[in-house]
Length: 145
Image (cartoon, rainbow, N blue to C red; front, side, top):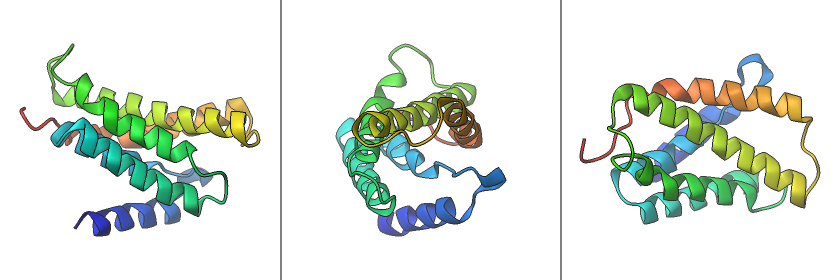
């Protein structure tokens, strides 16, 4: 079941590029699993999804694994610790998590590979990706909510 979901999300992400900007829908998988299951399952799912993305990206292997694993590991800690989970908070959390994932990938590629693009272009891409993912946070909530 999860293999089909990951494949479908990757196909949508690869084929849909509004305004020529790549989407980052795969970050929602470790975010969801981290919130609904456990940090360990979220991190494992994030590392698997990140490995698949790194393999398909023709760059170094590691940036997406690190970023997605971080998302899966940290996502359960944002709910119930400091804030009461509401759909609006889910939208904000999804925006922040999506932005953090994209920025982590960019920084890793800049440090360990080559500068993928100019910082100003990267900020536009990060903002658009996070803006596209944010409304989906309305539907994702922790297991105990």
